[in-house]
Image (cartoon, rainbow, N blue to C red; front, side, top):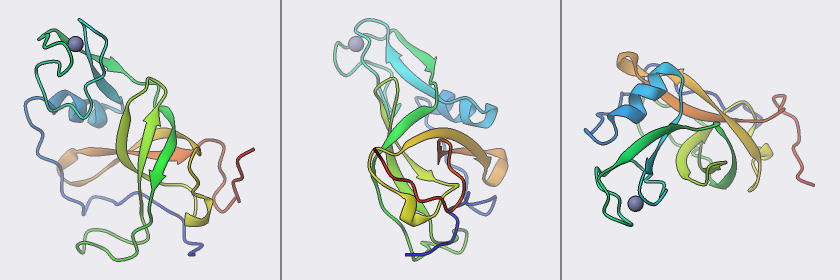
Length: 152
Ligand SMILES: [Zn+2]
């Protein structure tokens, strides 16, 4: 394991190309707001936001809600070989379940790979990438870099 701090990618990482359905999500990231799409008819959370119709009840009345940005790690890995020169390693892609009950693939920052465990509590934080876009990352709550974080 590396004792190298997990950190944001930086502006060399290309920006996403939002779809009409995901544009509000990415606008929120640029504004420092984590949003999730919810069906007004049945309260189903529609994430990732790739639809204009509820996949559960077929309602077209959907609303964007603001997430608390707090959640916990469901699954994670550590990448040691960069997929392109814009990425530095190591980095830690993770599936996080946010308090509202939706899951999102993100990357963990602010700790070292040895700190990562399932159930680790995290909070969202935004950092810029290319073209004025921002990515949502998560940071362990209360973590000091290099702390050994044990779940009770
Ligand atoms: Zn619905």
